[in-house]
Length: 465
Image (cartoon, rainbow, N blue to C red):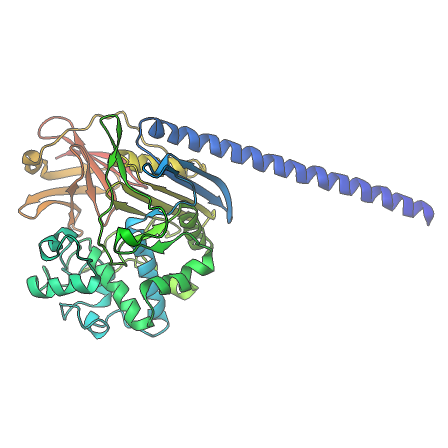
């Protein structure tokens, strides 16, 4: 018995030592992996920082654990406040992912009907035939730009969603098109959807988002901005552009008290948590995710945006969204298969063409598709008077026939016989397609012979027919 007991003790010691060595090896491998990841990310961002094209913060998560977090540059140069992963920054359209989630959640509880007219919940809404679903689908016919409202408000007058809708009722009493028949990216539509949330839930939009999402997911730095800069809590993160050797102001606009489409402030840490919760399936009840994961029908077609306001791959397991507001640009990506989350916020007017390269590069740092973009192609610089010459049909790999149209409404982008999407010039070289999240450029003479399309999933070029 004593001999067996001694042998058992020896085996126990050997087993314990082996397990300890195995655990140390796992820790060493994890540290080496994180070190390699940090090296990749730092190498990707360093040129942008050196060129004064990126200040902000980046956070990457895997399996619910943070594996990279770092701030770059300044959040407020005047106050001398550095950017950190916990610094709140203007999230632009990323607010739409919360608004859509809130609407679908209330619908799943039977508290609102997506196909009911908006006026059932918001009597101030000016168009009787518009449904809640039309708001989420960007198919409502509201004025698409906030600039429409500038002549109707004093410079020191706070603008609320109700105030904006009253202006629409007076000056655009009929929608620009029949709701549900075409796509037009709509910020005011999501502000109105946030009003629906308020009227149905009995809570302010801020309180609803905090109770349903922020507190539960540990998003402690996220908040809805006050309308007046003078009422800001603490030091405000400001927007800048590097011009003539120094940082110049390129900030957001004062007096904006509307929420739903934008005006939520997030830290990179909080955005990464939001991405991780979606990857883990804990952001929303499963029934809500299932109901909102598909695209909303628009006259037999749809945009690239799901009901829950994400751009996703064909399987719906790798999704992302972005936010853009003057100097501010934000991004969150999540991968349900590998439970990966990538997030960054910035206040430095990142050049348009480099945004997609940064996004893809950060995702690729996890050794996942898609890979980095080849930036060697020289693109045509185009003045507005030359834009009509871009019209034509291009044969583009993966997409097929892509038609660029030029009409009094501006440039349009259509894949095959699908919906028409607006093609907006955002620089002398780059165009953007909201609803598909495509970055577009041209090359090869005048008129250009080649159309280039880039996104999180694409990096293709096609020839003009």
